[in-house]
Image (cartoon, rainbow, N blue to C red):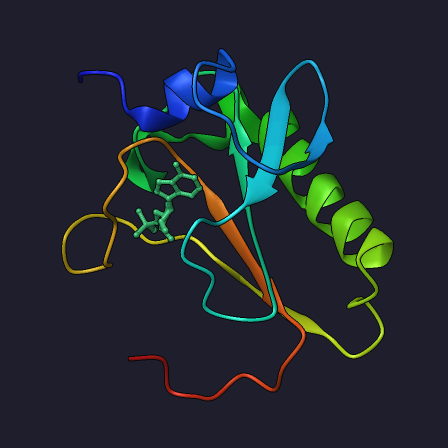
Length: 115
Ligand code: AMP
């Protein structure tokens, strides 16, 4: 699959507001925030979507995405009140960018069911 805008963000060719970075993971503020805190947490390796994952190959990396979410939630002061993590997958899931990403949303009360 062709690379996405997130590859350019990883290579720092497009500026974003980075809140967390390791060798394997990058997290930055969403350009179109849906909550007071809306951060995208992505692996630096190109994985298009959830259905391209398997636990044996990607277990470590998935753990790092969740570690990043916890650290960012703490750093941005939303851990105690709670937050929502979302992976959209495919067209029915509402995925627009085909580079795996976790949405971290917080700073307001979330509603359920999601739209
Ligand atoms: P999804 O709809 O789950 O694929 O989410 C893609 C997200 O990427 C959307 O929430 C967009 O607002 C966000 N996005 C797209 N381009 C950028 C960008 N250049 N910087 C930050 N966020 C972006």
